[in-house]
Amino acid sequence: MALKKYTNTVQTDLAIIQTLAADLVYRTDDTADFLTAGKLSASIGIWHAKDSASAPVGAGTKYTIEKSYTLTGDDNWMPLYWVQAGITAPTAMVTDGEEVATSTVIECGNVIPAVGDIICFKNATIGLTEFREVIARVTTGGSETVTLKDALTSTQAQGTYYTQVENFDINLLNLKGVVRLRVFVNNNLGTTNRAIIFRIALTTCDGIG
Image (cartoon, rainbow, N blue to C red):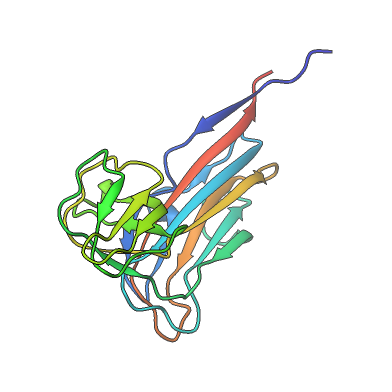
């Protein structure tokens, strides 16, 4: 008996890197929901970043993956999985100058992210925004730096960049019996909400024989 083969496919992002203001919500099906025909399972990656030095109060942003049993309409959406971001205030790192692509060592002021922090380098062209983890730091006065795990892909301007980026890996969602898939982003759950930056990626798995 031949073994069944599977293929993994990188889909168009459910949501490209973008901003979402405080007190707003976002549905990935506002533009186009994902039709799951022929797909056995899905993996979803969520990048969540605070776009403010102030923390939200009461509750963080909630990401809910929802499934539908119909091809059209909004009467059949049902929660499948959810994650919620934290509300810890980020560290605000001020860079000393423009950081060119391929940079790994970032010169900064005396407010220095911790090792393990993930920094959101928000670019004026939002699609060039990057998320990078800190793996080392220098705290010597006047020579402060952080070292990034991976080099910058794009040049990032001198500015203030925030930590507390969170990554959520939602792996191998069963799509059997699911007709459509979407993500609902609720940035209006706290008593005080803050602007965010987020991206939602999607890969799927299907049988080919």
